[in-house]
Length: 78
Image (tube, one colour):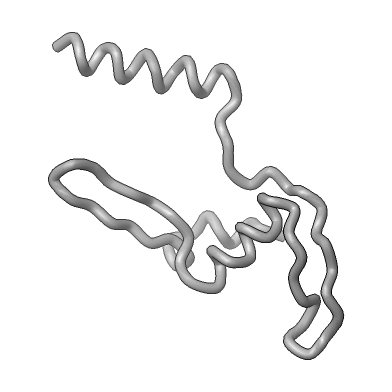
């Protein structure tokens, strides 16, 4: 269902001298937030509300966090 969200079309990127942010744009951001956080939304514009079950779209597992921490520590020690 969410395979197309990986494409650049649905992503927005903001950057500054202090960092970068990658997120979903407009309608895709709302849809992903509803599914990620177990929220209620309309099934269709004039339809009933439905509480969508949590679907992990984003997140880091323990191995991912360890890899990111290792990269950050390597970068900071240079």
